[in-house]
Image 1 (cartoon, rainbow, N blue to C red):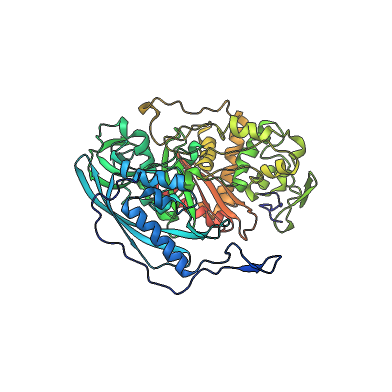
Image 2: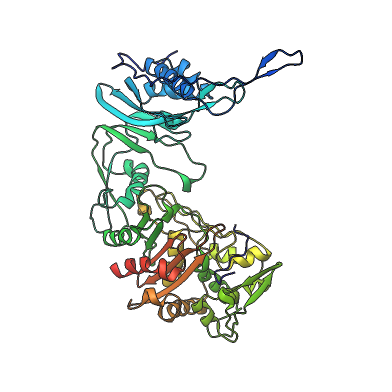
Length: 549
């Protein structure tokens, strides 16, 4: 068991080819053939059984060759009939001509690797007389039909283009939104070349706000993304080829190019890390960064246990309810049992006669867990939502996961007090926790002014009691100056406060490191998964952002 406790509960044919260019390149031959398994029947005769086992090289190359030849010839029905999902495959192949405007398709196979066959696709795109050549590489997999034993193509959208996922479509036409020239709060242009970590964010901003600028759309080949079940999971459309350029419209964001660069430098080189910064007095998002730069935006869409950074919320709740205060005796025993589960501090440490301030600064878990008996199952959920805005429907301007603190009971409720159990957040959520303390009330984070689209920002139902707010600020300042955050915050001047966290994850040797802090009117948070202690691993990232401001 650890102070950041591990408790075991975390838990017709389509006209694709009007004048095909080039011939089809055949695969190399093979003498191998599928093995047919035979066995004697009751009268001693031989009866064929369904072929089983791995596919032979000949089966792979013959099947892939047939599929690609049919596709290239424009016979969508024949090609689709060689897959395990003829209906979806035929519709997708037909869409390449009707929606993506592909013609003169030429397919060139590469060298098979086992059951996987790579190939290149070269096509001409023709939209109302605007033409462009387009080529790319993708692959298909050949598998054995479990019923017939015959080889067949395993249908996947990525067979048609590597960027396609389920429900996505390739489209060529006037772009759904004009391109944008995104600028930061001071007017500095933000480009994916200068800020690679913002590439996905800029795509999302174009999707949502491009038509609200003075720009004009061009003609593009793009991936039209399937609509996600949850707004937080929505991916932006992706431009693949520009046939005619549009006119960019200027879009002002709340980002700060200086802080954005600092955040990107801070996470760069780490196998995985994310950071976010906000302006406490307004909620404006100042920086977002992820490593790796491309892919999932963990900073705003991640859903991870926040570990002891959750103690910011827990402490506010305990003080609001009059259960403790910074100077009040609040022992942190070695062991506390809740709901049949025994919680143990890191290295069996304890603070026998210490104050709540000492336990907060040392991030001693059982000082918080020991209060589980004094709480209702939904107390933490209400505090997180009603005071800190966690779980409300944030309207930031880009897809976000807005945190979750579910109602739990017994051991899981106790674990939630220290940011484990079912509690889930990302760096933007955790930065907002510190921002709420610094400002004295919750200001929903946003990246584009709500005045642009007249959206309503989420509002918390209430604020902390004045005594709770002053007490929480003193706790976070003590932690920044002489507690677990002191090393990372050493020499940082101004009005400061911080909280460290490390969250245990099942089947992961090292915990996820968290750090959340504020300095004057900048609040930031970072997570470095599977790295260890929050102060030494995530702390330097947050410090870099705060000092850059």
